[in-house]
Length: 222
Image 1 (spheres, one colour):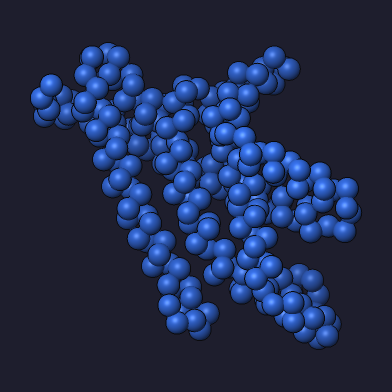
Image 2: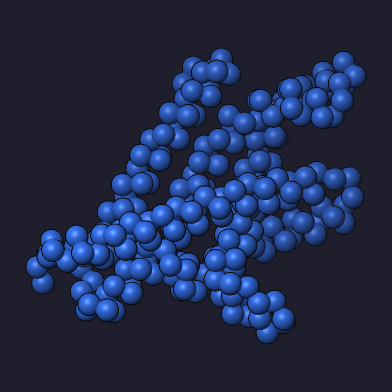
């Protein structure tokens, strides 16, 4: 089978439209994951052991099960319990919860990387907990968390093809539809791989530059 450029230009508008949907899904899912990860982190920092235990178990359960299984459960199984969600809503909730658990561990690791002496010094100076977090702890924890946060942003983007399994009109779903309509799969699938590559590589390079800039701003040589 030879490559057909006329067919490529014919399907290009639909592929670009699907690219927009893919980027939107990745960004919304990542935004939800950032918040969910912070909530999981704070719940694990409470003094109540029962809450700490339950949240840790929930985090480990979600991290230990595949994203695809969770997608199917939210979209196909939840309606049997009266919870009916659209494909987009199911996808965003699932991505947010799944990657939020990973980001909560990134946050926890970055906070643990801040020397305990920083906390003790703030207490000695009678600084409030809020001021301690935002003026002392978080500026030191953020550079540590940044690489992991960037990796999961790219990870979410690369996992968006799974959303095709529940009918979300992202790149892979559109490529499958085009192939079924025209019986040509070479061009759509090749374009999917090329588009992912062209977005992932510059994003990864930009994140590395951001890490370097943050490290320099913190007085670190990188």
